[in-house]
Length: 247
Ligand SMILES: C[S@@+](CC[C@H](N)C(=O)[O-])C[C@H]1O[C@@H](n2cnc3c(N)ncnc32)[C@H](O)[C@@H]1O
Image 1 (cartoon, helix red, strand yellow):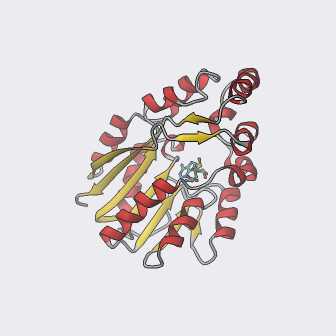
Image 2: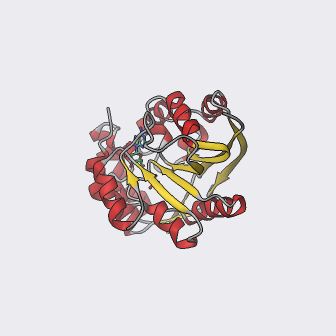
Image 3: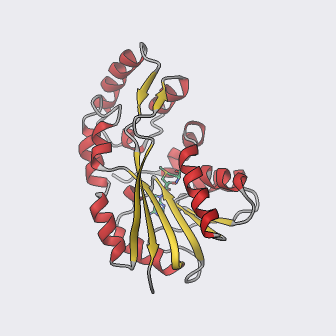
């Protein structure tokens, strides 16, 4: 089943935001490298673009996303930023245009990551840096809602490429891993209206992929269990840093 982000765009922006830790990691690297042309690939509603722009005006950020609905909101929130229609097959920029490319929560939606890395390699400069934020299989299994929606584990493992597959696919395009960071593991996620809202509005695409009866019964049980808690533990995300070695 293909996820329709034009439909998700109607709720996404009210329930998802840029993660401050990830923003800081990206900004530090951009500043250390003196990168000027930055691409947010699969920028969605532009949350990360907005946060990164707040931190400095020394670099220019561009966005690409295939969903018209998501782009419309990203453009509204980021006046003056070029946010274009594009995907893993076609990134509408010239060869070697970018010093730095990042993608947050996108790689599992891209059909063919070999095609993705070829296209990323085309638009990334030699010595340019790529950051990919994703979930490892261990993080998928430990997600706080996984036990309530058991099919989410099987479905996510099918759609998320493993860290090893991502590394190998990138390497075939001269994009080599320089570091792997585990982010936000065991940090606290507050149990509040926003969390319930995200679950109710299916703000996570996986909730639109599991059987509806499992979603409904899992949600009821999850709400009962969460009502007595202040927080749940984050299973974390994996941030893979790459650098392009040559053409
Ligand atoms: C979960 S959202 C993440 C949005 C944003 N990166 C963020 O972290 O807030 C996934 C985004 O990936 C986009 N997407 C889906 N397939 C894509 C593809 N083949 N190439 C680029 N982006 C894609 C969707 O349109 C959606 O906006």
